[in-house]
Length: 300
Length: 273
Image (cartoon, rainbow over all chains, first blue to last red; front, side, top):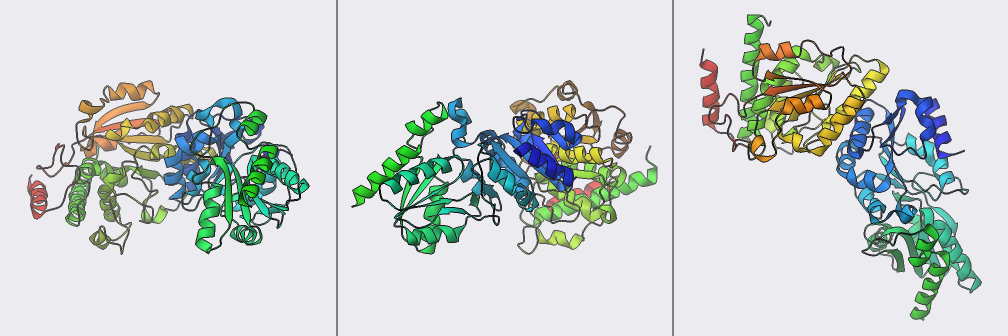
């Protein structure tokens, strides 16, 4: 299966499902023909794209909107906030090429604040699957929810566990001296980092958070109570993303834990091929393991 | 041609609606100038044009009216009251936390299709509604009222390109051309003229009309939609503050606090032959 074929199957079963795009067709190219007038391409016009989706939703339709993540969440931000979220309409916003996936595009195309922006909107769900399989497995559930939702689309191959309840984290490994908390593309790097640290005798936990709104608070608090150190790993700015989510939760719950952040702190990343960016920015599995090891030794 | 008796009815209804607008202004002020410029348009649309009523407000095939220049909402509420969507007594609750009648529209009020206030939004929302109505074969027509100052927004021109591309003949833009935006004349800030030429260049069927003449307005709206697969724009030439002489055409009559003097001015207009 693919995102496209999963979506087509859902659209064939549900006549209210509508597919929209601002001429970003890479992952949905094959839907135009079978869906006919239920496939709407407005051209490079993100604001109109979101407004049209709101109009369709007012008519009882279920619009799934596609555009590049930075332009969808930023160019059309106020349309999302005003026409979709204030009205509480069931519009699903799928952001292509988010975070590090923009690799060589440069800062204009880097959506490193999309999660902060979207989770800052009352009622907006934020889903960050780690690969295509994880998105496909959750798609029906996501569409069935009446809430608006932002999906950070990660077009990576791989397998995924069953989605569980909407908002639930995927706990890969419990306990340990250190628990990594991550989502999306960087899950595979966090897995590599965990394996390296285990080889060095450091016990690690790993949480694939998946939903950044709503957040699986129990899983995070449990990890904070079990591990002495949480390591947040995200291809997002430090402000407003995963690190913020974890710190806000711990503070609110009165749970104390050390939180080490790996995020972009007040800057965009150096554009290059993805493996080079990962290494250069210290987000490859090897570099993450190195950095966490250093932090733990420093503490001792 | 509107029969004389009907014309008189519309004029009386507009006069009562203007009084409702001033009543709202009495309680904390509101955007009186913008409301009075489009009030005759609303009275004509709801009285003569829109195929919608309180009884059919939930029907899928109804006509839709969207007020994109949301700050003109006193005119919409006044018109909805005149058509029985909700009771006049609710207008006593302007800016009260006990109700939801404030400076911009919200869909909690019967007859209001969608909230607005941020300019440049409802053309695209209306495009979505019009696309869906056409796709499923509903006879709905979607009327979107825009302010002329609102045409400064880039999203309007983007939306016009898309509406034209989608060949939406069931989408009708009504532009309240009062030639004033918040503080200054439109032509002194970001000139819109030649507006009709611009709209036509974007592929719309555009015409202009006297926005305070019920006869001219009902004639302009009588043949919609046209057979051409193009969106329609009706540029209605209006006067800010129309009906209250001390406010008419005044750049500073945008947001206005009510006063007995304004009611007296309005009443004096009504008593003229």
